[in-house]
Length: 253
Ligand code: SF4
Ligand code: F3S
Ligand code: FES
Image (cartoon, rainbow, N blue to C red; front, side, top):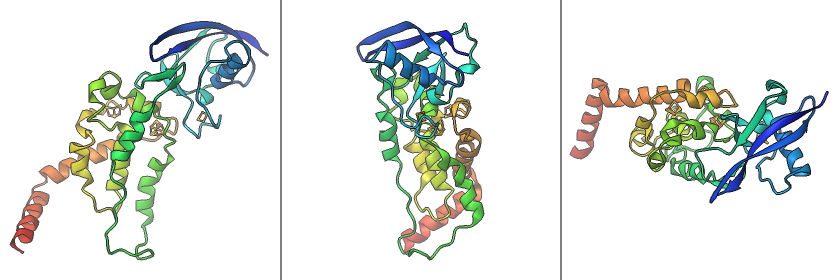
């Protein structure tokens, strides 16, 4: 059974904007993205929103719904009371372009900063067979749909614009962790995690994990293990001694 629902949607652009009230038809089985589309079709033809798949797979319809970072296409209207006003605003951490569309270029820049997979130079195709355990370790991270909800939520950038330059955010620290766990990767990911990608900014609040629509355990399975690997490398006396000996041997040679 359909009903008339109340919506508040943020309208505006980089120069400013405001919440606008709408009364709109809502039908059984609909999600928030359906309602935004209905508003575009009936009341606000110039309302901007980003979407592609309407199936929780492309990661483009991210927004804040009643203040919570969510995918609009995966947020069912049945999770709200019929007399509840549903508020939809753009992701807060990224600059607004128009209405619900933000400029997520920050994430592309951070992705480019992560050095690509670096196998040993002399390794030829077919010379290495991955162990199942190594495949499984990174499988979870590959489910990422690049929706940037985690990047939008982490307080290290959400409340601190000034940290954006030094902090890669949970999505890209997860990528660093994935590469560091790869048995064939030869790059020094631990040093880079600390010095280039700002791992130290993460104080394990786990807000990133809470909002991930793919239910990836970003904090427990990527960020904490990465922190542990960095600490092991830095403070384990055997690792320290090994690195000293290696350094001496190579400088002797
Ligand atoms: Fe989205 Fe999860 Fe990927 Fe972050 S890790 S971008 S929340 S899918
Ligand atoms: Fe931010 Fe997630 Fe760490 S929310 S502080 S990256 S655990
Ligand atoms: Fe693709 Fe929502 S439209 S994830």
